[in-house]
Amino acid sequence: MNPKDTFKTISKPSEETLLKEKGSKFFGYAFPVETEEMAMVCLEGIREKHKNARHFCYAYQLGTDQIYFRANDDGEPSNSAGMPIYGQIQSFELTNVLVVIVRYFGGTKLGVGGLISAYKNSAKLTLETCEIVEKTIDSIYEIRFDYKDMNKVMRIIKEKNLNVLEQQLELDCSIKLSVRKSLTEVLEKAFESLYEVQVKKIN
Image 1 (tube, helix red, strand yellow):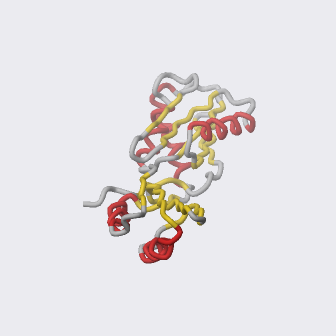
Image 2 (tube, rainbow, N blue to C red; image 1 turned 45 degrees about the vertical axis):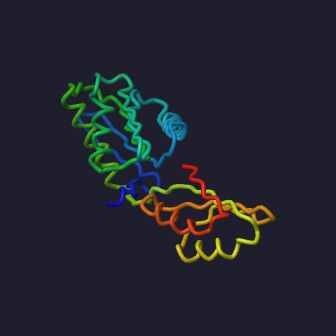
Image 3 (cartoon, helix red, strand yellow; image 1 turned 120 degrees about the vertical axis):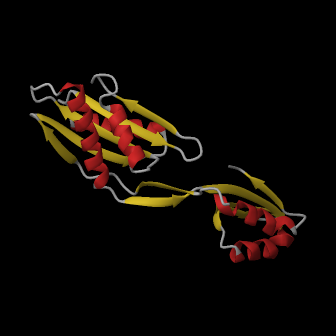
């Protein structure tokens, strides 16, 4: 059986959404992110946009093989905001995504149950506006070979429809390729017969 080599994420930042609950306003945003640093930059942008808001609650999930996530209540009662937001990321089966919900307090307390519901529904509303895309999980290989073997190497690359990321074709040649995770064995077998060609998996 092939290992799972696809994941779902969002194609671009979401539109702003607004949910109103007993006078409180919940503005929702979602961003495709690949690192924690990217998530923090997006969060700072939202803080700049809503300078008078009281709470900036968020959750993100990163990675495919190894999953890393974070959920932040930002001053709301424990687990009343970040985890309900993260629950929606899981519900939509997404990764490499950040969801931020900005709350303006409307004067009426919602209680923990009310907050959980509001943050969950705001995150759901936000993710429903997003275009969800399926991407492949790729492995990167470096192929090293002598110039004389170039035609053979290029023929395999063409036959197997491999994606060339970068190439250096001089006396000593090297090519970096990306290949879907489920096709790594196919790639390794294809180069097996070329004894002088070195195939090294980078990640």
